[in-house]
Length: 354
Ligand code: PLP
Image 1 (cartoon, helix red, strand yellow):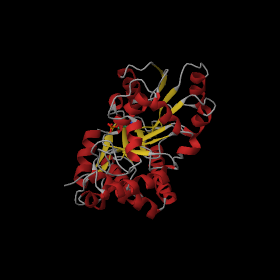
Image 2 (cartoon, rainbow, N blue to C red; image 1 turned 135 degrees about the vertical axis):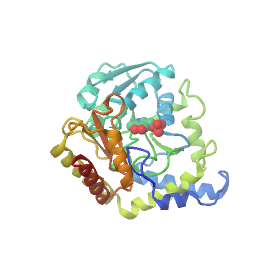
Image 3 (cartoon, rainbow, N blue to C red; image 1 turned 90 degrees about the horizontal axis):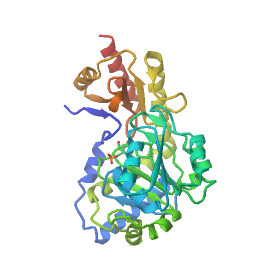
């Protein structure tokens, strides 16, 4: 039996998306692809509130994390770490021989505007990496407040991983002054993994033009050159781009307002249940809208819980890394509904009470 995915990615993929992926193949240098590419990027610009380019990468999110630092750091990067993926971005930066420092806070805590201000006031940095929604901890850091600080430093590029938040809540690329905003489509978009999108600002493009060692695959200048022709530098994952086109259309059909309200309603429901029966792992006020990380205060056996849920046709996620067993994670994003969440929670209650 198929297990419905309540894990924070890949998320459940609905039949319509699988069907869209079965659209007969076209060549990526054919006009049919150019039409598709133009449609998808136009819709992504609307989703993210940007007039700039949004690149389609045939890669997972890690690809664009690497591309972002390769293209945008000239001097020294500051990597803010509050979990596994923000830590990965620091490792990626160093692996590219880019000068970088890290500022690390305890897992479960957010990156705050104060922390960012302290780092930037040193004048040492020309780029910031920031993970909006740490999927390892379920912490959503206050991007609006951080953006306000970064705007005071026009020479700093603001590189944002919104891998598990994009399409789950409103992210305004232009208003937030973001330079690179990236996400894979296997989280809040609800599509299979393998396609990642990356919105870039003029500043990011300027940086890229003179970046000393930007590699080949993620060269923004090449992406820009091809995007102008509604194309990609190398062969893209065309089937997924078909599915993304249809998916974005469905977002606008639902309306973005309702989509984001649905995510918040699910998050609120899970948080209230968690607070009554367990406790939330993130600090108060910083819980993610797309996934909830819950302290396993009742010491449930999470693999056993998942065996129980498997019989119902569902699966949730254990805690990440050292948090395994101590926390568990419930994703509530993409096409998931409040009814799905209520049913899942009732099954977890049934397991606890048996
Ligand atoms: N950033 C965040 C916040 C993530 O949750 C993930 C994966 O779960 C990644 C980056 C890396 O994504 P991928 O493994 O798809 O490259």
